[in-house]
Amino acid sequence: MANLFSRLFPPKVMLHAGMPSRERIVKVLEEELMPVLGPLGFTFNAKDIVFRRDRGGFVDTIENGTRRRNAKELIVCFGPTVSVRYTPHERWYKSNYGAEAKTNVWFEQLCNVKGINQTGLNGPWYDLAKFDNRKLMDAYRYNLLHVVIPIMDRASSIDGILDILGPELHRASALQVNLHLMKGDHAGAVHAYE
Image (cartoon, rainbow, N blue to C red):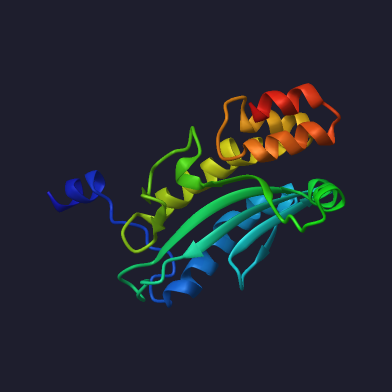
């Protein structure tokens, strides 16, 4: 009977369970994600728990912020946010407006990205202390490789960025106006402003 129970309900896989929460997050993310993100050009900064890829004028970032209330084995949460920075927009903004603009042209918490696998997510957080770490990391890996990185790859031109932002007005409308102006599309800028 015990054998049947263990086959139906296998024990949770808890990777590096004895480590302090921050070090555990760093170790699990580095071991589980760098083998697939490294070949795509991402580097890992363990101090900031950030994966970063530089694609010329575009900088893709996957930040994994930790929860302030993390406790060694009870709470081991990290919350991914994903973003794309377009450095030519920053230079254009400074030359036209005279102010610094270190802005992301796309920024979302992972939990708000359409099409992701919600396995292991509790609101914006992944918790290595509660969920089976293998299933959680499989879902996170899937979300990055099949949802997030394709969006980042689409943001490889002004038109790609505008496509990702969509035609509807939202918090990025000022950015949309600036991107249309950058490419010389004054009618598009007026439409984005209206």
